[in-house]
Image (cartoon, rainbow, N blue to C red; front, top):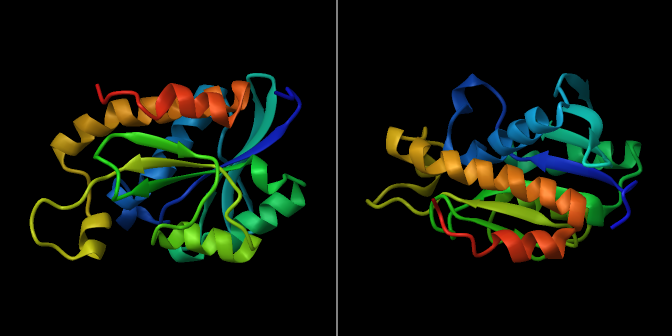
Amino acid sequence: MNSSAQWLIAGLGNPGRKYERTRHNVGFMAAERVARRCGVPIDQNKFKNRFGRGHCENGRLAIAKPMDYMNRSGPPLYQLARYFAIPLKNILVIHDDMDIEKGQIKIKEKGGHGGHNGIKSVMEVFGSGDFPRLRIGIGRPGTPMDVTDYVLGKLTGEEARIFAPALENAEDAVITLIKKGVTQAMNEFNHRQIV
């Protein structure tokens, strides 16, 4: 792994207090944890991103939260990646996923959008799905409920308990990916049991 490789770690979510601690915003939460771990304050604004830059595990990185709504996440990230000359394969996008068990995480090297509007926006603007993703499982509602209401709903107390180790795993996975690459991170974290 090239220790001087530059990464863009992008957590997806919706901006504003209304959406804090919602299931759809676990990408933001994970990005914030990585930023704290690496000592990189997310305190700059550019191209509709809140972001910070620094070094972590001998790698240079930018950690960003697009400040447009989820379905318009792509353009802010595209502009930031171009500005810092970060190649697509070095953009890790962290997002929620209803098709993964609540609290489980999965890393993919590339792929489709799976119906996720944030990933769809990123793919549209970059013209490719060839970027790694870290997916945090939020599961599906146990009762009949509109999907939008579910993903935009606040985490319950029980869910917060489940997501604490999930976000810790996500943080560790990002650090492993920066240090050892996507394949190693997949091998270590894709089958890790929920604590």
